[in-house]
Length: 437
Image (cartoon, rainbow, N blue to C red; front, side, top):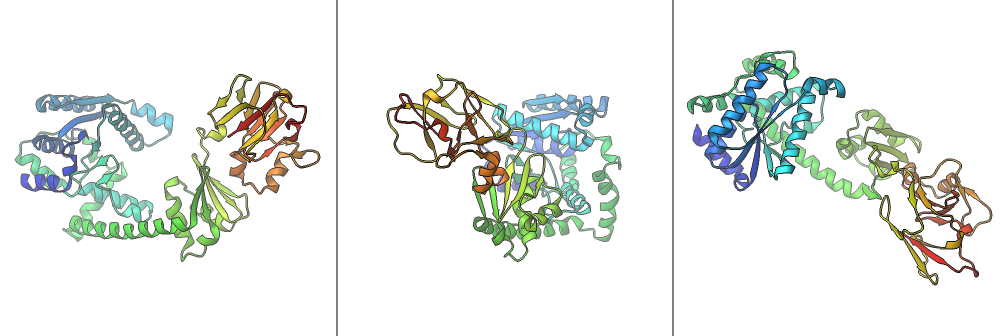
């Protein structure tokens, strides 16, 4: 039994040997076995234990057990106590989701602070089967049926091929002590209900259920890889990125065999939930959109435009003040202000103005309804909204536009697009200012 475990680690996870590893340990049999196994193989490991304070004294005993284990094995242990119940109410999450977010956020913080290369969890084959059944009951795409990945960026799961029975036999034969979590026996949680009620019934029908599932999971992963390869190839043909905006060519999308399926694959990582609304955008009028907390998908003529629109987006920056002494700003965009003697190399990325016509301090802001300017090359004034319409700018394009204004709020420049003629240099100009991106 020991040889089976060590051979698997050495053959499939040898890349961990010279790395600094953090093991997520609960005190349960799986994570304790993983700790003993890697310690015996002389891997560079430390422990991370979360006390969620959900089981009163039992939670504290788990924490004490981990601290004692770290002393016995002479390895570092990090522990933390969370006010999980309070966090659950404040963020309106289930207890399980709250605990998951708390622990993984903390694991990543530890990894960054202490330079851990990988975070190891002790998920096993039974966990994988449970996850498959949970996703199946809730409804999922192909990726939801492929189970838990053994390696997912910084997260590594070395025991995923072993059953819980094999892990328990290993612990028993090697006199390894662990803690039992009584809450694992409760069936009020979906995972526990599947573990204690559904899977035993399925194993009655097929005693080799776990082996059958493993084979099926491998086949599904192979199919998923084929899908991923195809989507990668198609995305190169129909997806482009401009100014942080992802653009999907609708005309090319609808020529594919199943546009809805491809659109799902292209957008599945952006946390859309109303997929029917997303699909309907293909044939909707321009201007229709679907949003999440972080992104907005907009129909704009022949394209679907995807833009990050959370509160941290640069499009939500407030007024930027530019005083007379400043010769450069770098946020939210890069602008350079230079005193020059003559105009040359005129293009959309730079303008020349009469500095004496400017009313300082200048400001950089987004457009507002009612804004107007006096475009160069035209008579009279024009509303910014009408200019945008004539230029056929999408909603996202408009949000990406900055206005450079004088202190009296006269628009000097629609940055990168059109200058206001009221500030143009003349033959009488004595101070010439070049403003460029």
